[in-house]
Length: 262
Length: 329
Image 1: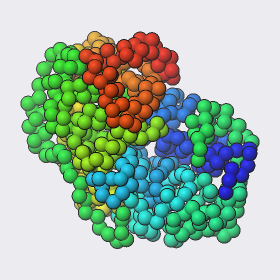
Image 2: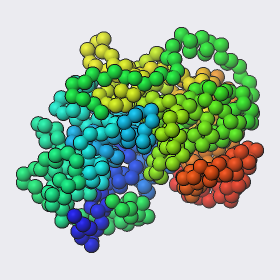
Image 3: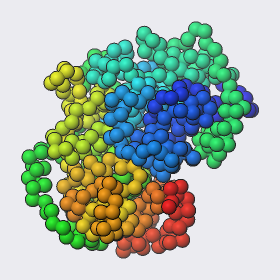
């Protein structure tokens, strides 16, 4: 497990892998940071008709630069509609939104996410984190949830301190039993080590491909729960020259995302 | 954390009543008079933001916020405020720096999106100084919508099955038509709110350019509403483009003209956020004494928002931020 290839860094690899998961012509509510970099790259490569929406209200903007906020002026540019948070969230609730794409602090084997707190006493947290924002709603109401996050034992935990955003909750059928819309749930998790999906029956995380230079043992060592592995288990295709050029020159020329350490 | 098969009993505190009869009684006596409501930010805060009130902040944390009113709340040392925190970022940071709030409905606080976490907001919440109830952006927005509709609650389909539900003041309900399990979220009628707009007339008729976020419903949910505006315009100008009006005058209690009023936040079509100054906030917050000196300089040491803007470079800096704004007309 290393910076395996001098041609690209781990952030670039993750964004490229993430971009390939988004199908053309679909709708997506996207958060800032890596998820948006992936969506912009997808629009410039394999998914030119991907419809990007922001939870604060902008619909299908022409993205010219990565925004700092999901509400700022760079989400507004060239949009077909400046709407509102309820318009976006209600579209999700009606079943019109295919993807949401999130980051995360802690994640468990069912793809549940914690972005609220570290500790055991809710009113006196050891570390207070922001909370759901729109993430709980988006992961509850969109058809497929994608997550992009660094891969280590601190993040890939057996037990979350707080379940902010629903994955498959406690397993198959649990979302529906809780009252969440049927048929939704986590779809892919893109990490610094692997592309991960979910086992169709058990709804548990299952690595689908390992990034170049990564071994099964690397994944096991960096995951606090028992990771499943697909068979066969291919190597994640490397970023192409074209993907890297577009990512570096058009999506994130300032290096806000791809210039960071994973 | 959720146990398999567990039925969650929500235990969050409900900070405000969803009683629609009480809300109707309040709105029944609210003035509809077509009168000049222009006043200074100092007067608006002094008249309408009372210690212990439940407060709502429009915009989206660092975009189209009313920094002038938030600073003035700190400057007047308002205390024991409740806050509705649907993506409250720089607004939350200001109110917490002034130790103004003691309870919060939380969807997103402490963080400033891609900029990172506020060290002081973290310290304050971790100290137990704020009673917290959890929500999400959609459900907190829909709480305004229920209030705007004059209904005590709305059903929704998110949040169920999670710890957000456990620490919320929502309830589970059964749809009377389909038998579907639903989340019931109570109406939120804030005592007072503030929204920063692009233009308003002297009576409070207000227009916003760009995304609305949750302000349409928030304006209707608030019992008292302060509008701060980049520009006061004539009523004729409002009437010339009425499809842009999102807030009619009878919802509004005070109109304050504050050019650059969202600074250091972004104001779409006017100026971009001052990322250097927002980074400075995060830096000084690392140290309590440093933060106090910073507040003394920028808030307690200034008479009003204009003096703060002058300290931050005045028209020259505002012009630069205008140049950085991609939607600048």
